[in-house]
Length: 248
Ligand code: 13P
Image 1 (cartoon, rainbow, N blue to C red):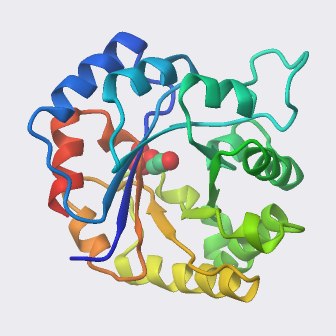
Image 2: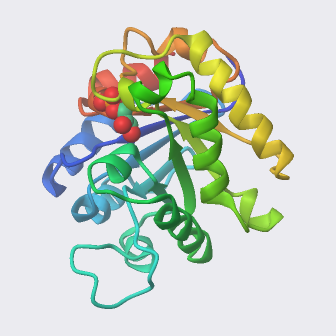
Image 3: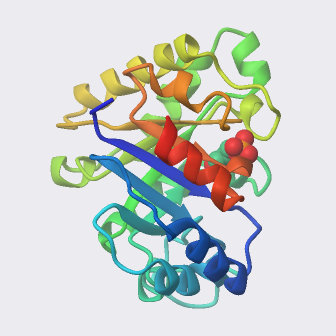
């Protein structure tokens, strides 16, 4: 498979700084990324700096942050600004992850502000969209995903839009062991890609996330609509994650 692929590891609320260092040592030992393959890691904010230092600089690597606040600084207890994340070594930011939306109550307006802040501060936003099970069962998958996309990207100029990468993560597939079939994912990816092209994105990239693991990554990535994967649980073990990155 020769097209460029992004393998993104979302470590969620796991992996302390020392564990990130140990992970990097094990992951990098003999690692030879295939041509066009990138590997992105999203540690907890407290481990971003350790991960950035431990992985070092590679053309195929990026370190990201799992969330950013839209304000540049100030009294926002617990939040991470774009500038703080960048100073710790992040070059990418997850924005609008389903857990931010559904566990922490982040609104579509919040997500839009975070996309704008990430872009203004020089981070690549990896914007996550996805429908709940109820929305899927009501036949609203595309409508929900396109509404989330439109809300998050409204008002971006062409240069800003061109830097946005999207992850389709159906909420019902996250951490449940139930993944979308390659054909199901491809249908939504086509809709997302179409909307991005219509909005002026020159080269949309759309990752899939939700219960991706060693057993299903290759089949999912055989579907050309997928430009990569965004993986939670199966990215926490260095050997297992490497086999996904190297093998799919
Ligand atoms: P799982 O791979 O654990 O289902 O998580 C997916 C996810 O939310 C990645 O951002």
